[in-house]
Structures are given as structure tokens and as C-alpha cells.
Length: 579
Image 1 (cartoon, rainbow, N blue to C red):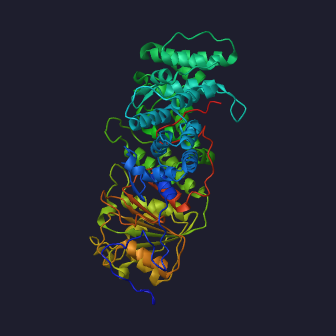
Image 2 (image 1 turned 90 degrees about the vertical axis):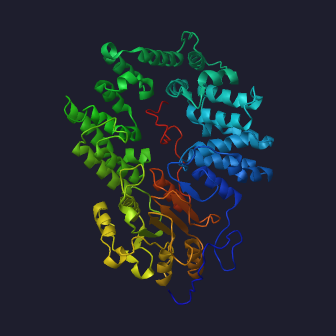
Image 3 (image 1 turned 180 degrees about the vertical axis):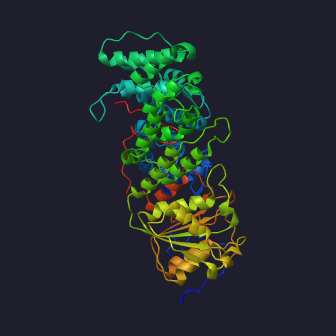
């Protein structure tokens, strides 16, 4: 190791709650814990892929309670709104739970602030219903709603009939949302409208409310109310369509009124090529990519009249950089989609297809191009990849191996940032610098990762996660971000990785840095110090992981606010933007 840095062997990390003299570890403040919860679903710097955001308890949001007690409730609400609207979190669930905590607060100012941003955070009925569910759980399912709760939820519906910041009213969007998201979390619009005593002077809004309540819909008396009534009648007729008789009629409803697949009876979604053909024209990028296998299984892309047209339609959209930017799809998500499509089957094997070569190539090209449209941040990265044998095994629930995921992360990062890559096992002497260049393709990077020296391979079963820090210190290299990709979180070294990191940043006098360790095939506990704002542990790997890591490294300061009419999350694809 470099002269002047003496490694102090430790079994575990020292206590980070009180930074040592000369150390640059930063204790996590309550506002940072709040941000962690909103982004990760936990106040700890820890993300477990594919299992986060299932169920929360008040013990997980103690930072919120402390901030409210300190008179910072309004700041908490602003933070919830900003992170939700800017799309910085993996899922909406934590933001909705945190907002419910504020709405159920005994502090009047915090309660008022929470309800004032309800529509900003609850952009679709799924969010609204989940917010209500959380509020009910916190109040012990007491009968009746308080005045503030009723008024705010009522305004969620009626505000679609008011002039917004763009100078427009949008009652048609309410009709679309009410029919698209009819029931979630055991709540329906009928239940909510009755409990909130929703009433409106706007006839177009009243028509939608009457429809949701199952009442007779009154006649329209203006273009605005007529458009809403016609849309709702089209949705109603679509539900009654029969495959053998009404396929053409249903396709017309979809095309004219821009219905989404939630408006279409399941009996048509199973095998109607015509219906899927119309839907595919209206799908946003994310939904189209998700449904490529289904559409190919119906032979829309091979063997049907007009198949070449639909293949060209898919290729043209995937070739559109603006659509890729608009959809905000991380490059690795495209790679996983390509691997899934190549496999030719869903995980449950219920839907099978023969992959179309042009679509595979288009997905591959979209992955490559999407890595080059990421905004450069001007940071220096060390990406350290352990070469354990499990790195060549598939990630749980995915079609790609841990090594492929690591290679893809390197490929997508090196296109815009200064990146150095090392391969390691359990000894610093065996740490191997991978000569990876920006012009290398994904396959080339994969090959370089797997083409490691024989002496390194001999230590496949041993890993010391402190090696990257020892390696960097020995060469006196400073990095803004260090990412470690491993097949597990077990470490056989004499010094705990968190302690090695602390000694490295102290020795190199690095004040601002980010450390991420990704245990891609593990389900055990983490290794980074949880009480440092600089550290993030990721256990497992899913489609949310890459964006979450980059959000953490970039510290979220340079994100642009996204128009909430087009903000997309994995579970809320809006097919159209009704204005």
C-alpha cells in the first residue's frame, strides 16, 4: 500500500455516528434520512431489489416525526413533492406514505401543507387510493373522514374542471383516469366520491362523477361536456363488445377515443391482432417495449398480413432518440428487455414467441444510443468488479447474468464519464486493471471482464471487498464515485470494507464522494456504513437499480423537473397525454 497510509485491521466498521478527527465521514441528518426513505423506501442507505416498497410502518419514518416536532413540517412536505414530481424515486409508495404521515400529523401547518400538494403527488387514481389506504391504516380505520381530508380529496376530482396553470380545464382527463384506474387497494371511485362528498358545478365533471357512481348520466350542453359524455359512452360500449361480432367496432372506439388496454375487455387482449394493432399506435415507449413479446406471439411481426409494417413501426420508434429521452428509460432496462425478448417466452411460459431479428437489433441499437444521450456529470469513477464464479450466473428473476449487468453498467457509464475498471478477488496483488475504452462494445467489455489472469481465477471462491480501496490508495488515485459489483457481500479480508473506505478517503483527503456496493446475487445484509450520507448498499439487481444508483451518485441536484402529465413510472403507463 502507499507510503503513509497504515491500514488498521478491523473485524467491523468503526462507529460512524461521531466522525473521527481527520475523517470525512458525514453523519446522516434527518432530512437526508427523509430523502433516503423517499428514494429507497428505508431511512438506511440500503436498497433491496425487487422487494422494496411492500409495506411500511411508523418506525421506519422516525426522521419525519422528529422533523415535524422541530417545526420543519413544511420542509418535509416540499421534499416529498420535489422528489415525487421530479421522478427521483424508484416507486411512489414511500412518498405517498410520507405524505399520509404529514396529513395525519397533529401539527396544523404540516397537515395543511400536505393536503395542499395532494394533487401534485397523487397524479393518478392509483396514487390517490394508496394515499387513502395509508391514511386509513394510520387512523385505525375510524368511520368517517375529517373535513380537511374530505375537502382535499374532493378537490382532487373537481380541480380537473378548474383553469390550471396552463390556462386550461381538463375534465376529459378526469374521465380517462377514472375509467382507466377503476379500483386499486380495495378502493373504488364510487367509495371515495361518496365518502368525500364530491360535488361540482362543472357539468363535465358531474357527468364523470355520475358515471363513477353508477347513476344515470345527464345530457351534455356544451362541447366540453359532450366530449366527456361521448368518451364515457365509448368506454361503456367497449366493455360490451363480443370478439366474434364487434372487433371492428371496438377498434374504432380505441382509435377515435384513444382508449388504453385497461378499457379493453380481456377476451380481446388474448388473441385479437386487430385490437393490438390499434393499441400499439397509442402506446408510450415503455408499454410498447413491455408488450413486444405478446404482440410477436400473435404473429403481428411475422406471418400476418402487414407484419413488415408493424416491425417497421417498432424499429422506427426505438430509433427515435427523442422518444427514448421522453420515456426516461435507463439503458440497462433496454438491455434486459432485449434479453427477455430474445428468450422468446414469459417467465411462466404461458406466452411464447419467435423473436424477430430486426426488433432484437433495434433494441440493441436503442441500448447503445441511450448510453450516449445521458447528460455527462464530469465525475471520475472507479468501477470494481469481483470475479467470483456466481458472476456468470443469471440474476434472480432476470435473463441476464451478474457479469453482463456489471458490463452494461460499465458500458453505459464510460460513454459520458471518466471511468477506470478493475477486476479483483481477495488480494490486492491480483487486482487486475481492465483496459476498457469508450469505443469498446458491450460484448468486448464482457469478454475483457471474463478474460482474467489464471492466478486471479484461482481465488474465485474468496473475495475481499476492501481491495478496491487499497488498490486506489496504493496508486494515490482520487475518485468521485466508487462502485463495487460482486456476486455476494461476504468479505474474507482482515479489514471491513467500510473501514477501508474511511481510511482511503481520509488518506486521500477526499471530502465529496459516493460509494455504492452492489451484491447482485445475494439476499443477505449489507457492507457499507449505513450512517454515512456518502454510502449506498444495493442487494440484488432489478430494472430500478441502474437509475437509482445514478440518482445517488449525481446527488439529484441537476435533475430537471418533469412535466407531471408525462411522468411515467413502471406501474402507471399513461397511453396518452390528454390536454
